[in-house]
Image 1 (cartoon, rainbow, N blue to C red):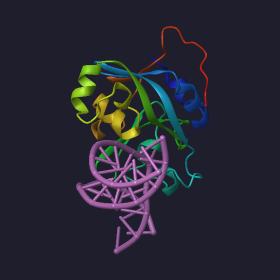
Image 2 (image 1 turned 180 degrees about the vertical axis):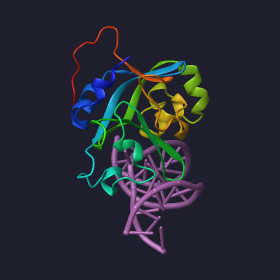
Image 3 (image 1 turned 60 degrees about the vertical axis):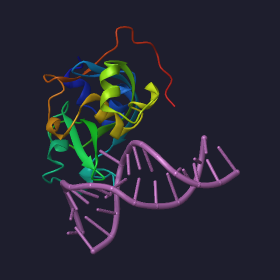
Image 4 (image 1 turned 120 degrees about the vertical axis):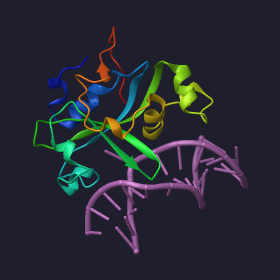
Length: 159
DNA sequence: GTTGCGATAGTCT
DNA sequence: GACTATCGCAACG
C-alpha cells in the first residue's frame, strides 16, 4: 500500500506516478491507466479554485485521502488528495483496466458488454468498483479503498 | 469510427 | 438560475 508521503507532493507528480498502480476496493481491483491533475486554487478548472467550501474541504485537508464528488446528477468521480495539508491539489482517476472481481463489476455495470468498457471513464470506474460519496474523505492508507504498487512494476509508456 | 442529445441533481453566483 | 472534471444510445458515414 502506498504511504502518505507518496501523496504529499505536487499534484502533477502524484498523477504521473499513479499511472500503472493498482486501485483496490473490496474484491474488485484495476490498474490505473488514465489520470488528470487538478492544481488547486490557481487552476480555473479545479473545484478548489472556488476556495474552501463544504464540498471542497477535503481537497485542502491531508494528502492520501479520497475526494469523491457527484456530477451531472447521476455520476460520481474519484480523486486522490495530493499536496501537504492546507494546500489544494488532487488527481482525478479517469480510467482503469479491470484486474480482479470482473464478474462483480459486470453485475454493477449492466450496460457494458466488453470488459474494456467496464471502467474506461471516471463515472464508470466508480460504479464498477462500488465507490460512492460515502467514501468521500476516506483515508487511502487505512480504509478498504487502497492504492497498491504492482508486484513487478515495469517501466510504462505515458502518452 | 464520429456526432448529437437527453437524463438528472448538487453547487455556486 | 446557470452550469457541470459524464454516460449510453441512436443515427450516420
